[in-house]
Image (tube, rainbow, N blue to C red; front, side, top):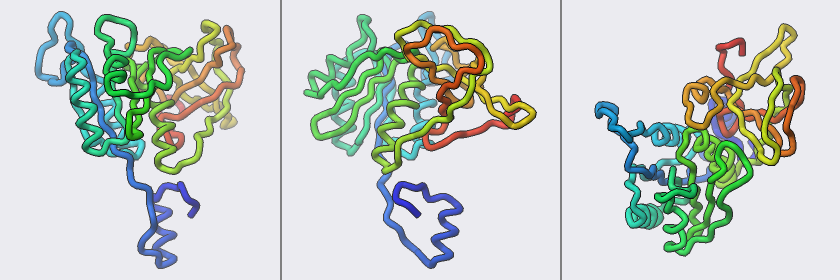
Length: 269
């Protein structure tokens, strides 16, 4: 068994067959999650006010963190108050969190205070805002002591892209896994996009009668839409330089699971 492989049923069978009772493993990274925004409503029984929004990012990220092999140490929904986030981050670091995720407050609005809090924490902001869609406002920083901070945008698809392609990459490194390799598959329809931005599109897989796979871009690509996120089997990556990609153009396809490809038996896949 090579270093970095996951211990699943088949690996356990091999170890048992060799009489190997114990193996050295990597400690699961501990992570804290803070969703910011006074508009967020966690309790499904509460009616929404005129400015209220159901908190979908919290449950999504909590489940995604567990699936990615990390341990969720702390989780909270916080108001738009810099002092509250400051205290939450310092408390999480003191409790042993190696990664800290926050959602919202990283764009350019009145309540986008995450950079201010990070400066107060004397963190090194490695990057803030990237040439990609969705997820342009993404922020990554290193805190004193080495903890990693990811400021994810608040829109659901933007949050999902930030987690899938940036947080998961960090978790792979911490878990001792190698770099992820996407599938290279043809598009099944024409695609148009703005040049200068890498675009992550919610996508599914379709197989023809000969078993050849292709990538199908889903309807509902807007960053606030959740139904297409639930239907997607993964993400198609449309390169920054392209404006039009005709059907048949090969693109990178990443499955939903950060360690490999998950297939859904519905919709012909």
